[in-house]
Figure 1 (tube, rainbow, N blue to C red):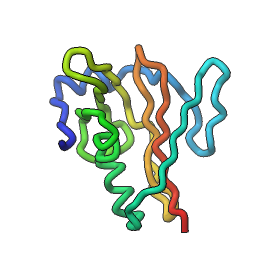
Figure 2: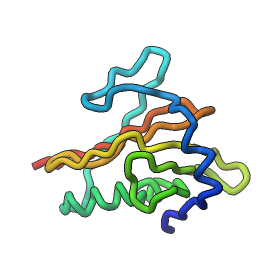
Figure 3: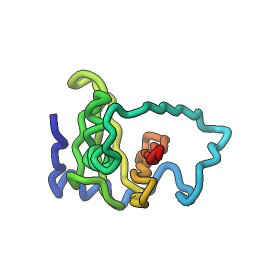
Figure 4: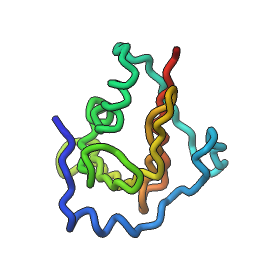
Length: 131
């Protein structure tokens, strides 16, 4: 399974939609009380940090988690819009989102992806090199 590119006609309506969750992306988030916080951490079997970051930015980790990804760009970059789906066929949950910021530092790589209305979630996809 690989990321499917959204057509211009499918991506264009998502570009101007305001983010459902706005905040500064420079530090760890303070989760507002009205939001439920869900966090999952996994140690990667892979020892190649840059390769793992490429997999993350190329949506492979989302696909491995069971999401079907349709994105405006094959590699996540600021402004990329995506529609992810979770679940079977017509019963699947539609998750529209936009990449708000990309992190590409020596020991921190990833991106912050914010869902678009009607969803109200923020997905921080950040990975840190453990060394």
